[in-house]
Amino acid sequence: MMRVLHADDRLVVIAKPAGLLSVPGRTEPDCASMRVQALYPDALIVHRLDQATSGLLLFARGIAAQRELSADFAERRIGKLYIAIVAGRLDGEGLIDLPIGADWPNRPRRQIDLERGKPSQTGWRVLGHEGRHTRLALDPLTGRTHQLRVHLAALGHAILGDALYAVPEIAAASPRLLLHASELRVAGHHFTCPPEF
Image (cartoon, rainbow, N blue to C red; front, side):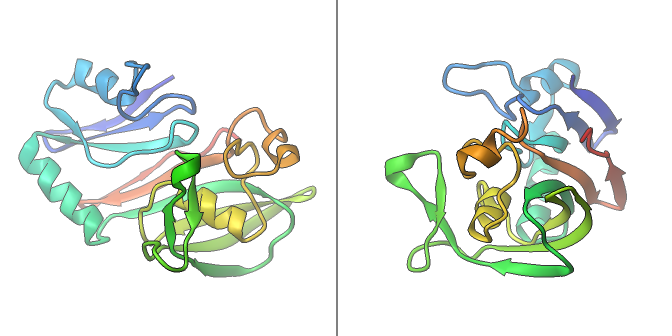
């Protein structure tokens, strides 16, 4: 269920459930942006989460605020932190620095593309171990489509429940993608929303 966590005259922050689109799809009109606009007609989306990803989603109140917040994202002035459970065991922390590009024959998939891909960086830190799997905090330093999912799969530690990038055994390990946008730092605010996994 979608929840509004904060609303003022400049921005709205919601907790998006897994399975809800951020914006209308080709055949699916129900989405977070339409639900938010039903409550705040001037709300405009600033960034997106994959349909399968849950967590914090930011909206601007009006076009001027949207321009400002979009610029903040582009200039990396907005801090984001995600929680994921990945296959296998990782220890410590690190940085994944691999360029990502479109995988045109297999859309909507993305791929590591060392020749034509856009620079993409993801910081990761281990939060704990859960059996054969690892709970990570993820800091996307860039904002490419499917970045966290592509990077972790390339690292050999795909996110549990990832039907696009994980091998069938890992994809089937969870009924949903275990990826959640848990923190957002924007315009002097710090929003948090713990995952349900």
